[in-house]
Amino acid sequence: MGEEKRNPRRTVKRLFHGLLDLIALLVVVALFVVVLTPGEAGEAGRAGGAAGAAPEEPAPSVGGADADGADDGAAGRAATRTEGGVEIAAGRIRRHILEHGTAETGAYNLVTAIYLGYRAFDTLGETIVLLLAVSGVAHLVRAKQ
Amino acid sequence: MKKTDIIDVIARKLAPFIFLFGFYLVAFGHRTPGGGFQGGVVIASGVILLALGRNPRAALSAFPVSRLSVAEVLSYTLLLALGILGMTLGGRFLENILPTYGGGILPRVSFIFALNIVIGIKVGAGVSLICLHLFERESR
Image 1: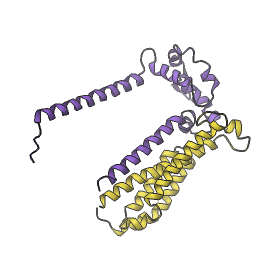
Image 2: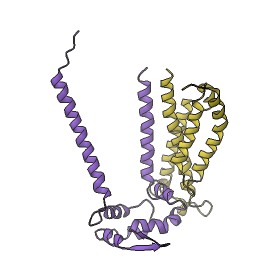
Image 3: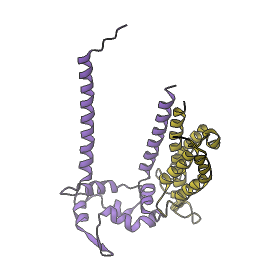
Image 4: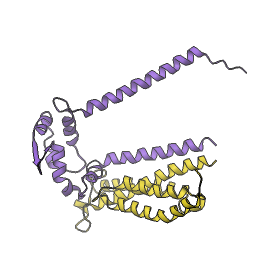
């Protein structure tokens, strides 16, 4: 039973899939770059301001000013404050977390206050990812018996 | 890797302290650096250390795969239940309802404490399950 593998068709198919992978990778990298670079108008600040307008915890100081999200980044970026001799460029989100994080969530560890207090839904997503990884490994290992 | 008795002895003597340290990281996650994910991985490393000995089945008799799977699924369900608990009392999903409904008894941080513990168990069970499955496959 001779199975003749059509070499040109297989090569084209592999090239096609490789090209798709490359395009997907470039799109993901471009998305990361666009979201994370602080642009001229403070894109990261504006995205942070828009996302911060609807936090998990009721925070009246953040939720009240979501109408002026346009000059949010610029105003927040220009304001700096000196703390202990070190200048901290304080965006609105950063300032709010630094000042009210402990009082609102009760956690002295601000990282914990963020990922279990303000953004606990993303932590749920993380646990879903871990669940997926475990079930994937269990499935792939058992299947080769 | 040649399995000697040294790994066996050291692993069985050291594993309780590794678990203790893992639980410490989970329990104090709201004050010191640590938390659910970090402490869970340390707990899983204790389980994996036990599995590296000469007789892994005897060493892992306290952590069979079925029990770890049940623990992982139960703790994930508990995490979802903690989130929905706020919704039943009129809040949002995963909102800390203790300021408005807990009264003055529990401090506000108890919600984050409970979430840390549940996530710690889940991550510990999950990562040790991954490694135990791969060890099973290797020994076949």
